[in-house]
Image (tube, rainbow, N blue to C red; front, side, top):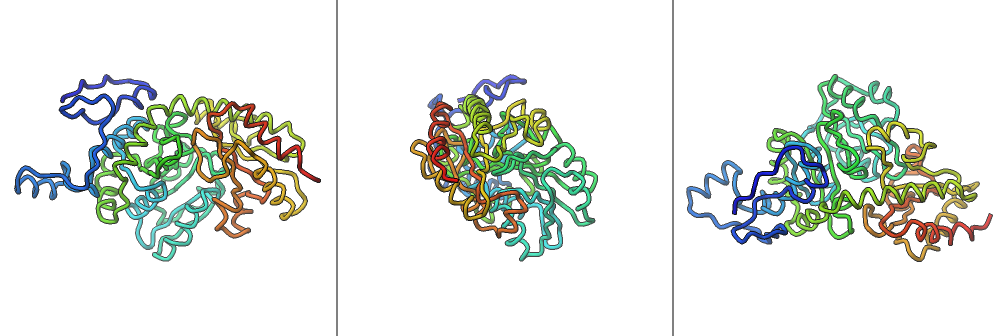
Length: 404
């Protein structure tokens, strides 16, 4: 069944609902789920041509109509020519490394990035001869000074997990391109609802679809967005060979999740700002990290880059006079919650509370955590769709019963 061509200039909320592949002959209104690992070919010549060219559907490790629908929708939201799915966000980063780098190449990375990302670059791929320099997330001069003749990639996450540090995407793009390198941006926290990194000069946009794109904590998914040339020539061969393929079922779940992305993200931003303001007034709290607050060091930059919204994640630090005391207080606040979920995902409709020092950044050394600004008194809250006053009341159960 041939669909009508969508007009140009549609807004993100409309693209998130309407962008897909053509309907089948049955005319389904909700996108179909193609649960098949293989595709029957009409004849041997067609089969040979499709396997040689990569066009058409042959085997699900190469492509699948449901995965294609997910990729088309995400590319439309990010404003890129193409996208390619992966089994997880980390799988997408692995695909990017394998597609763009080789032994002897150099990468510049924010030291404030997600713990697994730090380990993947600094530890795992260091074994294969990829060199990594870790710099301040927010100090543009450090990024510039770290450039070498063999620098091939700058990779930033903005805002960061969990301290919500914001980097200047346009400034990093200028540094990367002057050096003949590419800039990749992890946009999982902000989503294309708040910011489109390619409009600021980024070459590759990475997503953990497990987070806001799905929005209900159901499946694992990842993706890279970029030019058609990058997707076709650099990343697609890696997926076919290495197999970090996105399953059709997971692609379908995230595809449907993206339909409500706009309304969810905006509602979560509103609640998170209210909770952040409330936390700043609590005597047990030493500091709140949230880009929507004027007290955030990169507040003005964040408002420019993120459509005037701060996102759905905040972190706060409890007062304490030792590492042991800080951790004990953080555990008390977390364990006192009766509504919030103690988990490590984010972007869910259910609010999630976590202790970064022993979860997302638990495998790092204490020195690495300190360099990233993460103390044992740090608590991260990924705000869901509950009423913000119920979330505040739940946090207050622990805050109000802290002992000095």
